[in-house]
Amino acid sequence: MKTNIKFIAILIACFCTESTFAQTSPDWKKTTITRDFISEGVAVADLNKDGKMDIAAGYYWFEAPNWTRHEMAPSRTFDPRKEYSESFLNLGMDVNLDGWDDVVIVDFPGKVGFWFENPKNKPGQWTKHIIDDSVGISNESPGFIDIDGDGRLDILCGDKNKKQIVWLQAPTKKGETTWKRHNLTKENVAGTEIFSHGIGFGDIDKDGINDVVVREGWYKGTKDTKAGNWVFHPANLGEPCSHMQILDVNGDGKNDVVSASAHALGIWFHEQVTDEQGKINFKTHTMSKTTAQTHSSIMADVNGDGKKEYITGKRFLAHHGRDPGDADAAYLLYFEFTPDKAPYWKEHVIDNDSGAGLNIVAQDINKDKKIDIVIANKNGVFLFENVRK
Ligand SMILES: [Ca+2]
Ligand SMILES: [Ca+2]
Ligand SMILES: [Ca+2]
Ligand SMILES: [Ca+2]
Image 1: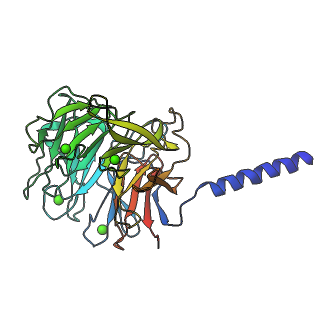
Image 2: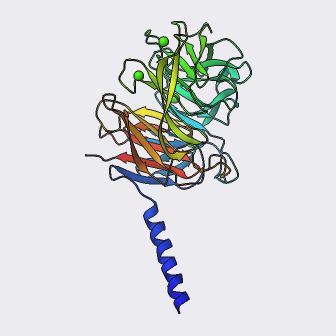
Image 3: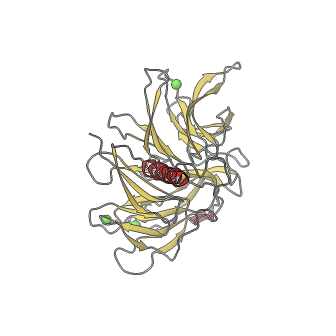
């Protein structure tokens, strides 16, 4: 009898732990789009042009408002403990400028990217186009960034074969399907291996021109984004990481770098300092050890204070449970920055049973002027509507 009571007590304890485990901040309304592992990238766009923003993840799209699942091309659900999907980062944009948003997919590191052409509500498969020049996209955190400032997002990445930092320019004329490859640096440079971790774009030296950062240093930008003459300046930007964000964290007028560990523990603020040789270098401060495997990040103003916050989350089962902590609670979090008050950042947990994949979408999806968040990873696909007062 005693044993039975003890057993029941353990059962109750387990049940309570389980039921209190999944927690979402009251500032966010969580919707589970699917628990299937179909993609580690995610995109948002109004794909059927009904005025409501839909969600794309890999070869599927989910139609708002009921998130009805449609297939763009044949695919399947993957085993999160054994497999990778064929979709690592996604982007919704009108690639061929026909007025209908398409879906761009960055595949497994080193593979060629492609995009699915929106069939304009016609039934059947979406046409798959290879991103031209067939560049094997290297570095595990390519950026969807407007490199030439024409208002169209491009892809910042490494070229697998030439080991060069390049950008792939989205078509600029109606009806065009071709992306153009442009060099920023010379060949055989840092940050361009297939499995290099971490790249970012911003003005490190405040000369008014954006530079490229990798964890080994930074490439000084010039006005010419096509000549491949950006010179490397070595600097210590810490351990392998995901998308690197450039901002002045501590308000001293110098731009710093924020990054997060792609496969271990740590979210960092790399403070820009001048080293003994008078050169730009960085001093690393740990911002958080809440969660490991933070394999993506994005900046967006989620609290409506006019400044951007840093959003990241755990790539759940990043290496199928083989890495320390990669099967732990799948945190999604953001950091607000307080440049006038040390330690200059404040952590906010959004949720602990979602995480993030290889890219995060942060945009106003339900048109209430607040930034919402969408993620896809080995845990499923999730929408977080920003409901803060
Ligand atoms: Ca829609
Ligand atoms: Ca289109
Ligand atoms: Ca610069
Ligand atoms: Ca600073």
